[in-house]
Length: 394
Ligand SMILES: Cc1ncc(COP(=O)(O)O)c(C=O)c1O
Image (tube, rainbow, N blue to C red; front, side, top):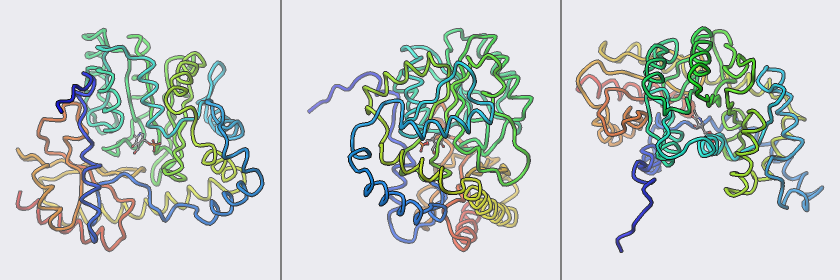
């Protein structure tokens, strides 16, 4: 049958990363492709104890429907954390979502009419870009510089395109580039967006994973009025992505709209997961756990960078992240990095070519992303050496 799909599906392609996951199922593949946290960081024994206790003590509560806004004790504990960081202000609310992905999708759904524009860093997070594409939003890619988004280009783009209603930005340990925006750039971004009446979605799933350098305040915390930024957080990279817990902090008028959308989307976030996350945050040491994750990722990142420094040809340059999970590479030649995918998979190494992260997904790019969080040390060394050989022959 010839299916007549909705026009909103025209701009959306399946994620190449998901496709690559299928190829990666073959045993022995060294994957630098995903964005997963290391399973070594999952507090398995603690979560086992918690889930057993919850289901023994009050199964009728945790297996029942819950409220859309989220499990109140979890919302409270997260709200406290967000207040301490200056993110949750008077007039704001915190709403728990099924991962940051849902928060981004519903925030865009609440704001964007068909044809409304959205500015974002290019490259950017593929899951968010695809969500925006389903709302038929023209995407305006703003280039990234070593200290964050190009604010001159942002200013010019917003001035020339008054239909832009949203800026989506990942200022800290950006996915896919690993870049962190400077404090000065963040202030500039806020000031430019306020001037052009553009709302900001600040996505910060990696913020806790700093293993070098100094913390930089979030854009949300810089917004005195509390009205211009929709802040999105997640427990995926610091606790477990399988629990599917994210959250939004925004002005209550925005949260009300997102709550209605969530009601029709999935009613509420998995209640057992929320209760498990709450018990874990309450009874175990979040800061100790995060310290261990930072040490692990810091080690893996330095190892990968050291191997790259020693083996990659000089025409390949790359970012040196201070946290998060990714290194972004540029081949300074007129090549499309996508042509390396098949030969690398044949050698059992997976990575993601840059085109997937660009606002124009069809254009060839000389960029690629490497992830260091899930591979063993041995596989990091082996996989980088294999990539170096392929890059020398490109
Ligand atoms: C920048 C960014 N935002 C959001 C998400 C989605 O996270 P969650 O698992 O909380 O839905 C990811 C996941 O990789 C991400 O990289």
